Structure formats: structure tokens, C-alpha cells
Image (tube, rainbow, N blue to C red):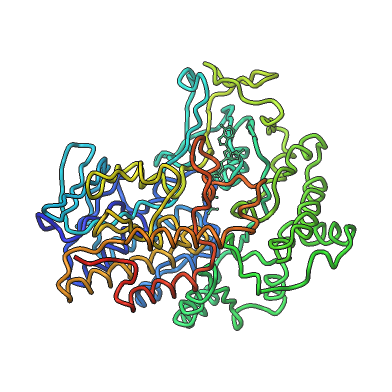
Length: 556
Ligand code: N01
């Protein structure tokens, strides 16, 4: 590790890890600073029971190394957190990444030194490091949100957050457990907690549309078929709106299996392109929709692409979904409380589950609708709502993240002339391509706001950004440039474009309150943050920008 590396990378999740490898391979010296004690980012922190990826692992994996693809075996089609973390560790070992990572090091300030043209990073331990380039690989969902509930510090039991779950196993046997939150994390954790705890109380504010996840174990023949076709698969990813190839094994699966995969359409939570088409939900009567859901499960509703573009079709799908929940959950009052009514399918990221609705048929599970009777306070022994008191031993927050902007703001970035990112973003994130900021020369972000990021297979989005940044630094060195900086007008034009493409989609309907819009954090500006125009269109724009000599940037 050199004294002053060429590049300082903040974060050693999947983005930071690839950045180390990529930049090293082009002859740059690097140092990554990571708050955790090991690699893996999201998969290091989110160890809660049931944590699992919602994109197939053969797609949610690095594509930069043929050897890596050849040698790694996934045990399941959609991997559980421990397997993904094992993969991250394997990558770290295989490419000897740890020698350039400083663990247990949280960055507290990132400041541009104009005269020296250097970025100075300060750490929680009081250390200072400098480099010409700074790459923020801080993740999109890495700042856990813990709601400010009165009395939170009074609780005498054990408090956990799904996004900060301890590494050592938590024994919940015989315990009364409570969980707040029913997003992706809550939905995955609830069935597991219910199996382990003596009693589980679920505090739900907004019901979720969740469909059963694919539970297939990985068959060796399927893995092999992927291996043989990886080159084509990676290319297909580059041309798919969500960065998912959708490649289906042909040789190693039966015709029935392939047909089931097609009709159930459960490949991943990444939205598919509307042009993938299919039958419209309005072509069926209400009774036919209900029968279809009874026969094939709730996941079948995701196959109707019109439900994501046409409000009438959307409402038909929402109604069929609610009927499906009522058919599934025995207690009518609980079933009714589980039915989403305030927003439609497609507004939030699709949630996938294992036994979620069946969990509410268990004797040891109680659902509390805190929209009807809000949480008033956390007490010494539990929690109080408007109409009841609940006692428990363990409180689990599954209350999500300060998404997309949270980690960048927490790093306290200050650019040229003392311009603070917190001030610049007071009304929402403004940046160019989700990659760079005006007044912050030589600072790049991986999967920043305004890029497809969370609407794309993250591994694809990460590799594209890191490669673009690496190529840009290479270009600068070849052309003798010391500084690159996004131009304010390019930044403004891009933000306008990001907003324009999001307008009129299900993501931004007035009834939709998602973390994509920042709506989950009190006081956060309501702006649709990721780029919804599709990964290929975005990638091409990045390529054009580079090919035109970094259009929208200024060199110095
Ligand atoms: O967070 P969320 P998440 N009182 O924000 C509730 C990814 N992910 O961690 O909707 C009561 O979705 C809140 O209620 P409401 C994935 O991209 C992926 O679950 O605000 N409740 C909501 O129910 C996902 O979208 C995977 O009314 C409160 C919940 O907490 C993203 O991470 C797995 C509350 C938060 O849901 C975030 O998911 C896990 C309060 N004061 C996560 N404050 C997979 O790959 C919040 N809530 C499968």
C-alpha cells in the first residue's frame, strides 16, 4: 500500500471490491476504507434470518473474470445471504483484495483541497488520508433507518435492526419477538422469526404486495449450461432494461419446467421491459383472475405487463392480489389488514417471500395494524399503540434505509470553495449521470442518484460504473489532465431528464410513497432518485459522453 494512493475508495462492498481490482489492473495504486470488519457491504451487514437476494445468483455475480465464473458454484438459484457473503470472501481472496483495504475505518469527512488538487479523507479514528481521485462506493441501501419513536431508549430488552444484524447467531428460542416494518427485509425475516420465537408480533404500517420467491436448488446441469453461455448472458444483460439476461437453460431443464418458469414469471424483482408483452389482465374477467391466482399463486399477476403501465389494468391486478390474500389468510380481519389499498403494484420494488402470508395463519403470530392505531411510544417492556400495550423481549426494526443519498451525505463531502454536498442537495440530489458532481473534481460515485442502480441488477450497474471511471482516469493520464469536473449545465440537464422519464410511471403516481422517492424518511425531498429509462439507454449515454471526449465535463 503506497503512502498516498492514486485512488481512495470509500467502501468495500461489491462496488469497492471491483474498483480495487479494476484500478489496480490499470496500474493505479488504491486504498479502500471500509467501516465493517470485512468485505461484502450489504451482504456483510444484512445477516437477518431469511436474508436472500431477489435476482438469480448466476446473474447477480461478477462478469469481469472468466475464471471466476468458471470456478464458482451457487447452491441455489436465488442465493441466501451466507452464500453471497461466501462469494464476496472468495473474490477478496482470489484477487488478493484485502491487502488494499483498511477495515473498521469509517470515513467522516471527504474534503477537496483545491491548491493541491487532492481529496482529503478523515476517519472516525482521526486519521487523514489523501489521494488525487476519490471513488465513493458507499452503496445505495447502506444507511439503516431507525424511526424516531418516543421512548426508544427506554426499552430494556434486546434491540436489533435487519440492516445491522449481528454476525454471531441470535437465539430467539422461547422469546417474545416484535418486528416493526413489512418491506422486503421484514417480509423475509417474519416467517423465519415466527418459526423460532415463542411469539411474534408484527407491527405493520403499510401492507405489501409480495409474491412467492423461486426456491429451486441449483442443479449442476443448469450451472454448467450457464457457464457454457456466460459470454452471451453477459451480453444479454447489457441490452436488458434491468440488467438481467433472463437466460433460461434449455438443455438441462424439461419442457414443463421451462413452461412453468415462463408463466409464473418469477425471475427477479428487477422490473422487466414492457415490450416483453403478453396477455393483458383486462382480457380476463374478475372471476377468471381470481381462479388464475388460486391455481398459480400471486406471482402470476406479475406476468401482466399492462398492470405496470395502465391504471385500469393496475387496479384490476391490485384487486386480484387482494382477493388472493383473502383466499390465503384464514382470519378475515388479519387478511383485510394485509391487503394493500393505498397504492398499486409497481410503485415499490417488488417483494419476494417464502411463506409470508401462511405465517399469519400460525397461532404464535399476531398482526398489529399501526396505521389504524399508530405506535405512540416504546416502553420499558414493549410498545404502546393508540389502543393497546404489547410486551416483548426482542424488538426488531425492519424499517429500511436512507436510500441512495444517505451514505453520500453521511460522508460529509465538501467540494471546491467549501461547497457542501448537504447544501447542494438540500432540495434533492443533483449530479451528472449518477457518476460525478460539479465542484467536486476527480470525485466519482458508483451507482449514484440519477443512474439505473437499484432498478438494475446491481452487479451489472456496478461493473459498468467502475469500468467507466477506470477508463476516464486512464484517459486523463494519457492526455495529461489533472482534473475532471462535471459541468453544472450538464448536471441540470441530466437531472431534468431523470425526472422527465420517471414522470407518468407507476413509480411516481401521487399515491406512491417509496424509498425510491425518499418518502420513507421524514423531511427528505420527494424526488425520484434512480434512472428509470432502462440500463441500455443509460449505458449508451455514458459511452457517448466518453466517446465525445467526456461531454458535459471540463478538464483542467
Ligand atoms: O425497507 P423498506 P426494507 N413505524 O423501506 C416500515 C432491498 N432489499 O429494508 O411503508 C412503522 O422497503 C415501513 O412502513 P411504510 C430492496 O431493494 C432487498 O424492507 O413506511 N413502520 C415499511 O413497511 C428493498 O426495497 C432484499 O408505511 C415503519 C418498512 O418499515 C430495500 O432493500 C431484501 C416506520 C420499511 O420497508 C428496502 O427494504 C431486503 C415507523 N415509524 C432489502 N418506519 C432482497 O434482495 C418505517 N416503517 C430480497
